[in-house]
Length: 385
Figure 1 (cartoon, helix red, strand yellow):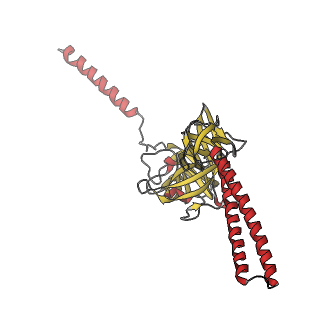
Figure 2 (tube, rainbow, N blue to C red; figure 1 turned 180 degrees about the horizontal axis):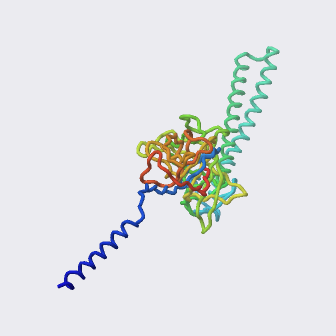
Figure 3 (tube, rainbow, N blue to C red; figure 1 turned 135 degrees about the horizontal axis):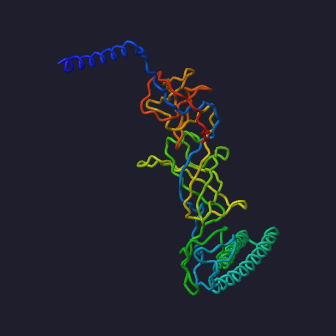
C-alpha cells in the first residue's frame, strides 16, 4: 500500500520541483522591433550633356536624272554601241547609235546648192540695184524702175537668208544621225536593234545619270522638330540648311557607308501615314563606293544640337513623366521631369533634373515616396543620340 501511494507521489513532487526551478532560473526575453532590409537599386548620377540629335529612316536609291534617248531624225539604225545594253555604262558625248545618213546627206547637199543659187541671186540683185540707183541720181531712169530694183534685191536677200537657214537645218539633221550620251550614266533599258527603223520622237533607250543619286526618306511630321529645317518649307533647301545624312547598307557581305545631304522636301504629307518625304542626294566620290540604283539603305540624318540634356534608360521614366530620385538619406523621392525625346532604349530629359542628382534606373514594381533603398552606381554610361 505504501509503495503504490508514496513512491509515485514522490516522483511527481520531484518533477514539479524541477519544473519550478527551471522556470525560476529561466532568462527573461525582451521583445525587439524588426527593421526591414533596404532594397538594393541601381542609380545613375545626373550629368548634363550637349548632344547632336539624329533622325533615322529607310529608303531605296533612285536616279537623280533619268532620260529617254530619242532620235530627232528618222531612219534605219546602222550601228549601236556595245554599251547600249541594260546595265551598260557610258560617258557624256559617247556615241550610242547611228542612223543611216544617206537621205540626210543628200538633203544637206541640196540645201547647199540652193544656198549657192540664192547667194548668186542676191549678189546680182544688189549689183542691179546699185546700177539703177546710179542712173537715178543722173536722172537716166525712172523712180519706179529704181523701186522695182530695190524690191528685187530685198526679195533675193530674204531668199538667201531662207536658204541659209535650210542649209544649217540640213547640216544639223545630218549631225543628228549620230545619237550621243547626254551625260555620264547607265543604260536602264533599250529597245532598238541594227536594221530597225527608228522614228523621230520615238524613245529607243532609257538612261539615268550616275554622278548623283537620290533616296526618298519618309519622316514622321513630329520628327521634323529635331531637324534644322525651315518651317513648312518645301522644294530645294539652301545649301547652308541642308542636313548631312549617312546611308548604310549590307551589300556583298560588307557594310558600306555613303555620305550625302538632304537637298529638298516634297510638298505633300501622306494622309495615311502622316509622313513627310525628305530627299537625300549622294554624289559620286572617289573616297566612297558607287551607290547602286535600287539598293535599300538605312539613313541617319544629323539633327539639331541641344545643350544641358540628361540621357537616361527609357525604363527609368515612369507614369506622368516622373523619375525616382534617391536623396541624401537614401530614400526614394518622386520627381516630375520634362522629356525631350524618346529614342530607342533611352529617354532625353530637358528639364527637372540637376547635376549630381541620383536617378533610380532599376525597375521597381512598387515604389513608395520615402522608402529606404541601398543605392549602387550604375556602371552603364549614357549614350549620345
